[in-house]
Each structure stands twice: as C-alpha cells, then as structure tokens.
Length: 126
Length: 126
DNA sequence: AAGAGCGCTATACTTTGTCAAGTGGCTACC
DNA sequence: GGTAGCCACTTGACAAAGTATAGCGCTCTT
Image (cartoon, rainbow over all chains, first blue to last red; front, side):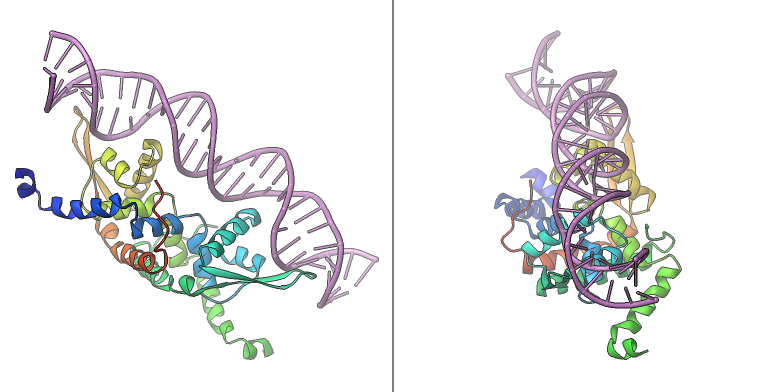
C-alpha cells in the first residue's frame, strides 16, 4: 500500500496490466502490424490511389517483388487492401486500400506532421 | 495534355515529384525512421515515463538486448530520446523521450485509435 | 524485329534480429 | 555467510527477414 501512495503511476500501470492480462492491447497489435517493413510506405503510396504491382513497388522507393507480394498478401488478409485482377494475359492487377486502409490516413498524417517538424534535415533513403 | 485532363491526380503527383526531385520527402523520411523494428513499441513504452534498459526491453514485449541497444542509440542520435547514466556499479541507466519523441504521441494516438477500430480480434504478439 | 513492360516466382545471397552465455558488482533473502 | 536475482550491456553463433537477379509468356510500342 505504501508504494501505491508514493507512486501515482502504479494505478495507471495496474490498468495497463489488466488489458495485458486479457492478452489484447490495441496499440501494440496495431504497431505490430504497421512496423513490418514497407507497410507504412505501401499505405502512404496507395492513399494516392490504386496502383499496379510494379508501380507500387517503385512508389514505395523500390521494394523487391518477393517481399512486396508477401506484404501485400498479408495486408489483404488483414482487410487493409484489395487486389483486383484485371487480366491474366497480359497480367494486369491493381491494389487499392479498403476502408481500414484508408482510415490509416490519420496515422500517415500524424507521421507527416511529425516528420516535417522534427526530421527536417534527414533525406529519404533510396 | 489529354492524360492530365483525364486524370485529376496528375496535378497532385506532379507536386509530389517536385519534393522527390529535391531528394527530401518528410513523410517518407519519417516512415523510414519509424518502421524500424521495435521503434514504435519503444516510443509507446517510454511515453509512459522513463525506464531502465531491461525494464524497457520487457515493456516492449521482449526485445533482445543487442537490437534494443542498437535501436536506442540510433533514436538517441536522432534526438528522439536521451540516455542517462545513474551509476556504473551497480549499472543503472534510464531512457527518456526528448521533445521530438514525446511529440510522437500524436502518431501513437492515431495508431491506437485505428487499432481499436480495425484490429479488434487480433491479439498482440508475444 | 527488337525492346519494354506486365505480375509475379524462384534461388542464391545479404542483412537484420534472436538466443544464450557471460562480465563484476550490488542487494535481498534464507 | 551463502545464494540468487538483478543491473547494462557485449559477444558469437544462428535463424529469420529482406534483397538482387534471372526468368516466364504474352502484349504493346517504336
């Protein structure tokens, strides 16, 4: 009891432990998804509109096709985007954000604002 | 010219190409920083307050010390956090977000909101 | 006719992250 | 007093993730 009185954070920590105990924490789950390499780049690019596979790879700054495919399939599974096959020969597909993907605009906007304010002298890689 | 008339997005794309031509795009630079494994987890954890090295490793869900150190050093270089040495023996350090790191609250909040709305059935890893 | 582009796949290779052991002391507990 | 746990890392071997590149068969463009 004495330590609770000394440390006002304990009460908040206890709350956090409650949600961890249930095995689910929204922000951590979301970070887990979004931290995968290329994911945020893909979302940012697709917020500009639907794109073909190679077009998208170039738009994100050059992602190798194996990883790009892997990433896109995962994001499609999660419901963030949809893949449309326009023709098999010639092969034509396009990728477009679903509603959950479009809603990441709030995240990209926050990142953009933060980047403008705090990363003004670091050029983009690649 | 006809393609510009058909595709209203071309004007926006041209603007984006301008900033890319100068070699700097804030959102892409920021994404490049934030997409590194553990980074967003680290920021989220430190938004709760300063932490020791091992405490932080546990708080992010279990990051191995080699990568954690590497990541923290990089974030310190970028000015996102500060490392304080309290004593060498026993070894005691703490990590605390700097102003630029605290300002990532807006990003974490956006991610949290998004996660609550769209990832309601996926448990956090680890 | 030749070249570029499409959407990938496959394979060898490189890079990144993990696992586990370890250092030398300090502190708490039995 | 002895033991165990903790601290902040470092190290080296290994696993996982990502990359580079060649290639397929067709369609368009020059």
